[in-house]
Length: 285
Image 1: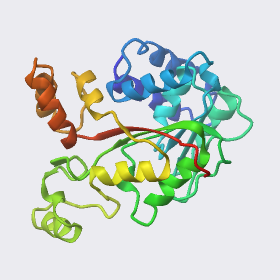
Image 2: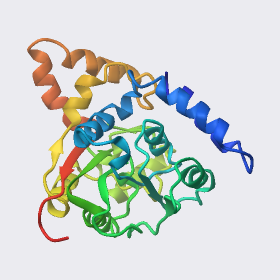
Image 3: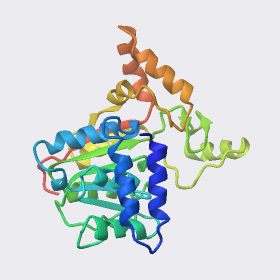
Image 4: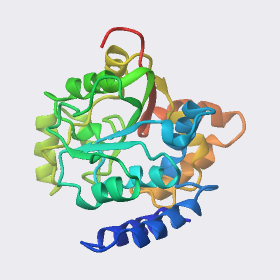
């Protein structure tokens, strides 16, 4: 079952309006369940790590926060897989359908999807087992990025996990602007050159060097394990990749080669999207 099919089932959820949501949720859940053996490639590592963290516990016992959840599709996917103790926060629009699912289908007493201010997470200390984000941190401003990580630490349980997918400045191709290399320049020159070649550089794009994120995670949360090479090795058919897909498939083939593949992977993992796992240490929040 492909990610586009899952997105199509999610779209039907949003078309329910004020009507009954139960039938549309059942259809969405059925589509998700058919993907259980071959989950969407961009969720594979997240799912594996959630299952690793869960161990022998029930899926519903694991509290999960999507920190910058957008439309909340990843959380709804997880809920359909049994991870029903979900929370989503973003600075976007109110979450009507998502919160109807939260209260009417998942039977939470409170709405689990919230609109935030970009800094504070409206949850109590130590509530969350796993917090994650997918391609969010490049949109967090310089005056909010430290709050972002510090708040994650606050809401995580001791030894809770933070999992992040982070586009960064070292990636040669920027999918946001569909340009090559110009984001290597300082921001004023990046924007000026973008205007010269007709590329719109959004004000909300903050591509940072990968080591910035690794250092920030270590400072605010604890350890920082780099999962990028693991993703490169496991994702060999990125069918709905939004960048130069031929180049991405070539990378997969190269790193699968004997001997040379290990060397190539160790180098190339620095020039693709960063994926990290951090474990909250025992320092006071």
